[in-house]
Image (cartoon, rainbow, N blue to C red):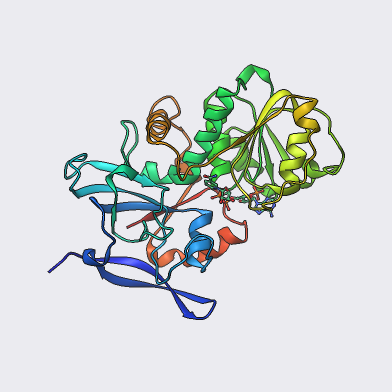
Length: 330
Ligand SMILES: NC(=O)c1ccc[n+]([C@@H]2O[C@H](COP(=O)([O-])OP(=O)(O)OC[C@H]3O[C@@H](n4cnc5c(N)ncnc54)[C@H](OP(=O)(O)O)[C@@H]3O)[C@@H](O)[C@H]2O)c1
């Protein structure tokens, strides 16, 4: 009999009404693909919560198992790229969107989606990082490439207590920058300072005057997960020649900004995508996360749960109330 396993299944119970339950599945139910992985850890990202609650922009077809992140051991690989037992990370591409994802104990995917677990990380640490942390690292890497360096001034992170934000603050501090953290949870100032933030700002303090053509120059660089007027305000307060990495839309997908930051201050807006990120860049970023960007306080950003315990964090992340990363043990 084919291998049975446990997975979270999201079903459309009645039109536009979705339910979640833990089911037993068979590896024969998984989509075709060269690489079969026994998943040990996954993580909860904002997009997983959208998929788990029936957002058709993320997942078109239900029933479905979400989980855009998975880390585990190779069971078999028809492409011959990976040996049985090798530890791999799979994030992004179609995993967890319309391909059964990491909220199940097995996934089957194209071998081209997987990265070897780099030296310096174990499977659990890789999933504390997950897509959110990988995206934060992509942002830091792009800022570095755009010439934003630690001596140039402060780098601001919005949505700082969230998944991307927490890892971004830690990584910037690790890479020698002075991170400023923008948050709606000012009671989490100690947490953010512990991760390495040198300044904590309330959201409203940053967005004040966002409708003005330009704001006083403050930031050498920025990592924004919020979009909308927050991203507009950040662009308008970025210093001459600075750069802003845009990776999220928890506030709004709109960008109400004029061209002045670009044509008067030479500010660059960097688009960040982790989903289709090319394999050589993925490998480079993951190898850095296991080496010079290894985070001393990674564990403090993490809360571990099982598939059965995911319901509460799914609701909390949609309300913007989560702190740090949820790592899912399978
Ligand atoms: N481009 C990519 O490849 C990529 C990859 C990963 C994630 N993302 C996107 O990045 C965003 C963040 O993901 P995440 O996993 O870090 O989510 P998360 O853990 O929920 O973090 C988002 C944080 O943003 C702040 N926030 C929430 N709602 C807000 C609002 N209405 N206005 C201002 N701030 C708000 C909150 O932090 P504070 O309370 O501290 O302000 C919240 O914790 C999402 O839009 C996600 O889709 C994109």
